[in-house]
Image (cartoon, rainbow over all chains, first blue to last red; front, top):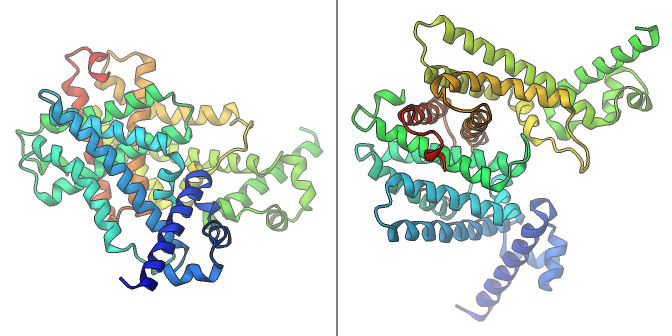
Length: 214
Length: 214
């Protein structure tokens, strides 16, 4: 890397870190180019030498958030694998509660993952989509054990459904939209939904998978 | 009612309807006192003779949205009851897909139900909370059939968990956060989650309900 390219990379990383701190405390709406430039000690215009726009920065921060979430999911899987005879349902429950714990601990950053909307016509970069897909694989693996006959495509869809269900419980619980939900109850709700869905899938393992999902 | 009280009531209703139209098209962020006053033909100050603030108006609009949703859930229940031998799981699936259909048809108004945040220290009026609780009863009834041994408190919690799970699928699907979800797939996801959770609950009817939810 040339000296200039190196400096650009350093500035880019500094901007991502500054944006990360801002999002962590103030959320997406707190992000301003001027304040970021001040934090990293560059001119406002210099920002646009290393990122296309603030959306780029937000995507980079969200990538870091996904990476942090992945570390927690990987840790949950290690606990499952160290446990004697953790069933696929146990593993899914542990992943669900790890997700809840992550969202609780990093509420503002976690919310930014879902609040960020790209302007029309702009797409998420392939790398970011791949980061997302990698997270789903943590759910897909125990699902594959639970229902070995599921096609890969079907398993991906079920993983997304299950994730969305858990996300709904976590989101409404943490937003306290319906009423204040104590964290113990929330944990129980996540565990309940995953356990019941898992058992329901176990109960149908004998049948044709297709017929009961129509 | 005196003539004056009647006029106040009329102005209040006109304002709620104007706010409803605005929220339907532009969402919560489009709501402005000045524009509302213009629409109903009153002075801006007159608004505050009949509502405390814009939050009051939003709550009134959200109440109407809940009432419209309730009509759709009631219709879904009538279809279930007219069907021969609709199982509790069938009923829950029909309620879930009715919820999805409502959210799809009234996306902006539906989103306003969840986006509206009251300023700190302000609480939702008891009537609104009662409107919410009434909706949950549609879920609680088939749940009670599915698991007759559930305590009332427990059943309310399970109903909220199940609703949150369906809401998560609908919300992430309609927001297209993870990727574009065709409506048929979304319907299938809702049906899948509810069916699996319902079957999981059926499978445990024999056991102690308590033990498997910890």
